[in-house]
Every structure is written in C-alpha cells, then in structure tokens.
Image (cartoon, rainbow over all chains, first blue to last red; front, side, top):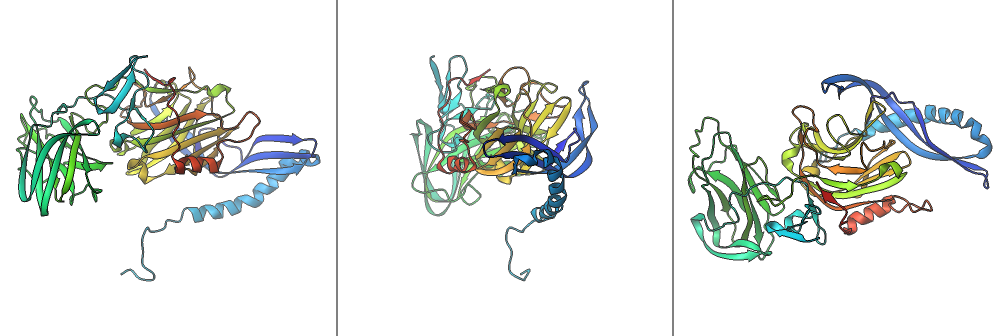
Length: 110
Length: 387
C-alpha cells in the first residue's frame, strides 16, 4: 500500500510513445484504487512530530497499445477501463490478504 | 594506495576508504567481500584465548591452541556418549558497572561435520558469575548468526548479580566432535559486531550515484541486518541521500513496523510531499543474508527480494539532496527523537544502468533472478569510500 501526503489522481500516465510508422501509440499507466484518507506522523520544519493528512492506495501498473488515431480518446478509454478493472482488482486484493497457516492437517484439528 | 590489513580479515585503504571484510561468516557466498556498515568497537578478550576454564559432567575434552582460517583458535576435541562439557571464558578487565551491557560472541566450526544446530543440544553461550555457577540464563539474550553464537547480558542497576570485577561467558557442548572456537569477542554493547578493536574506520559507506542524470538505474546489494536493530520501529537501516532529519529526498529502509516482522520500504520527499511505497514484509530479513535489487525506470520503482519482485509502484525518484551519492547507514543527527540507525553488512554491491543506450533492458526480471540464483559476484569499485 502506497502512502502519500499528496492526494493521488486515480489514473497516472507514465508516458505515451508514438510509433508513426506502425500507426500505433503505446501508453504506460497506473490505476490507483482503494484510495483512503489517513494520517501519518510527519516532522515539521521545527523538528516537531505532528500528524499530517495523507492518502493510502493500491496501484495497478500496465501498458496498452492503441491505434494512433484513437490518441485523443485515450483518456476516455482509460477512464472506462478503470471503471471496468478496479472492482476486479479490489476483489483480487481480498484474495491476496488471505492468510494461510504454515502447517495443517486435512479436515481435523488433531 | 597502501592497504591496511587488520585482524578479523578486515582490509581498507590508508585513507579509510574501501573498508571490506573477508571474514567467512560475514559474506553471503564465496568470492565476494562485505562492506563494514558497523561502527568500530573494543574487544575485551583481545584475541587472547588462553584464559579459560572447563568443566566436564560426562565425556571428555582435549584442547589445542591452533589457527583457524588464519586466525587464532581453540581446537576442542569432545568425545564420549552424550558429552556434557562447559568451557568458560573469563572477563576480568576493570569494574563492571551496574547497567553495563555486554555481548559475547564466539565462532564455532565443526571439523568433520556440520553442527546440527547451534542450539541447546549442540552449543550455546551464557554468562555466569563464577566459572560454572549461575547455569540458569535469565535475561541472557542468546542466539546465533551463521556459525557464531552470541549472548547479551545487562547488569542489574542494583548490582544484585554479584558480577563486580569479573564474569565468564560459557560455551556449552552436548555433542561429540572436533570443534574450533575462534573470533571470540566481548564487547560493551547490546549486540555483536563484526569489526572489533577499532578496526573499522569511522564514517559511512557512500555510493556515488548521479540520480539526477539517470532515467533508469539499478542498485543491487546483499544485506545482513544486525537483529538488534529490528526489535522495534524506532531502529532502522537505510540507504538514501539523508543528510540529517530535515534534509533528504530518497531512502530505502529496512525496519520493523510490526514486532519481529522486518520489511522493506522506499520513501521519497518532493515538493513538500512525503510518499511511502508499498511495504514488503519478510521475516527472514532478520535472520539471513538477502539480495535486495532496486530498479528505477522511467517513473516506476521495483524492488526484488532474493530475485523475486516484491514491490512495483509509480514513483518519480526525486533529485538527490545535496550531492550525488547514496549514504549507507546514517549520519549523526539523522533521526527523530528516540530513533536509532540500524547497522549491518552490505555485500556484492552493484550500481549501474537498467537499460542499454538503445533502450534494451539489461536487468530484466529473469536476469535479476539469474543474478540471485547464480550468486554472480560484482567487482568492488575502488571509488567507494567511507567518510
């Protein structure tokens, strides 16, 4: 979980690389989800520790190739993708947080 | 530049730079050296292994002063069925003040076979008032690290333990075999260090990295934490551009937020904002050597633990604060009140580009795994310095 005092945007684009020859554009992006407000201990300029407003969130990083003529629609496409993908990511997150015992017997506590 | 060679296999240049160790239990695998990220300390046993006593409840033991890996050692041949033998090393230097904390550590190597475990059934270490009394080990925080056993003892403030001018640290054998006891050291510290007798120059290891001019880079190293520094969240180990508590922009930290559960985390400070990456928790960080590989590539950070990807976040690494170097460890005053810098060992350090000039990735996920599994040694750069 990332924690930042800077409020994250839901979608972050690292870069867009155009391939004119192939008529394609490659977009690398991050979806930030499960964004929640929190507080962290932060040191102020006087060296005193104080609680500061922060946000915690999960990230999904991926890249996608689009036809170049769709470039002006990429923001809308990523927004739709975010709406579609994030609920699935949130469900996957629940699987990741399941804790398994290191050793156990089948169907018995003995 | 002339080199200084010290006991305990430590070598450094006369200007204090390039301080590395060859000690067999201070490296993750053969063929590499470890950098001293610990401060110097005094060995009250001073490499003198003649002042010892022993008691045999059953079995037999013979001793021979010898050399193990080029260093003085005591060879102990333990025989008999279910032997029960204690060897006590004396400390009698000066008064031992109430409240003082001492740590004893001794290397134990078996001649013919692996020791099946440096635990109560093979060998352990404890402090006693006289040579063999006080067998119970209350507060004798003992453990093992590689082939070394160690024990820590703090005199009660009221002095009720009776340890006034001397005490003993006892090695306890319950297994037959031929053993070497070596590199034994007694320090006035709450933890065992690798660099005793003032052998390690003061200062911090600094890695020259010009982050500002890099779109991509790799920082790979093996680390072995001193477990003392993973007891609570106020003690931590870091590699960053930290100048002091107020002035730093980038930091890789190994610490415990939860008791006994060390984790790795990357921090940055930029434009007044503080950002923490994902946390990767790994209990073995307090026990074993681990290979940490940090990758920065065009706004993404990745952290690999023993060749496996553990963290991936969008994260613009900010410009370094001040000059272009990463500090391993901490300068004085770099902490919030109550915090302490963690010490440990760094080995097989590598810094370089993540990609070739044509954009092709060198340090792919597969390559990082290969570097870990093959234990590829990287040359020690003579540009690394400690000051």
